[in-house]
Length: 117
Image 1 (cartoon, rainbow, N blue to C red):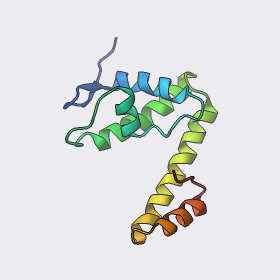
Image 2 (spheres, rainbow, N blue to C red; image 1 turned 135 degrees about the horizontal axis):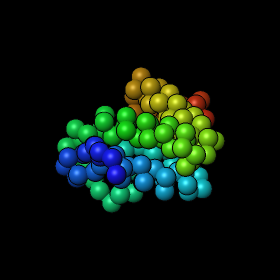
Image 3 (tube, rainbow, N blue to C red; image 1 turned 135 degrees about the vertical axis):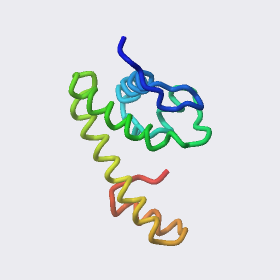
Image 4 (cartoon, rainbow, N blue to C red; image 1 turned 90 degrees about the horizontal axis):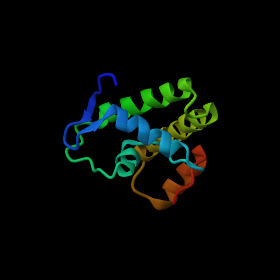
């Protein structure tokens, strides 16, 4: 086994564990967007200081691309994940511009094609 990188030193999560979690998460029907929270919960861990969040995000995105290249996740799953992330990012940008208003949030979600739970 090659060198493994520790992504979160608080909970000692390595990049190889994130890769395994991503395969399991993205193999599910209607797989969720693999955010650090989704991945950490899948690993039954919690972010403590959140200092690892930027590295966790970068690692997740890099691993998703690598898993697609290796054929471990289908290209359509990778494309769907990217699409969901772009929609989510657009929704968050809209929310940052407006006050906390449930009607506005639903309208913003409709505008970018998201379903608000």
